[in-house]
Picture (cartoon, rainbow, N blue to C red):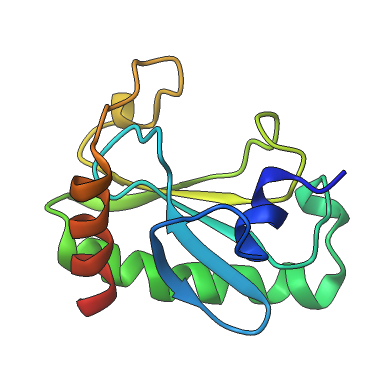
Length: 129
């Protein structure tokens, strides 16, 4: 059965896309820790991050870096934090989270509740940045 991220990549489930190339897709997390919280996923469905083929593993961070630079320009923050956790969805992915302090990366904190319109506006700001 395809992961929810594969279904997003295939267009079966809508997302708020902020970046894409032939190998990766970046889209807003619908349950973000902070405004601008973005997920970067390889289009190849692989469960564990370090099981990615070496070419994808080597390429995901430069792609994420470009997305992080746009997030930093679009969302007020000190920096963009990065996390690879891999427990919530069985599809390798990287979290990019605008942060000002360590607690901004605490996945135990309550998530923001943003409307589809708010998410769309944030995604547009990031795409334009």
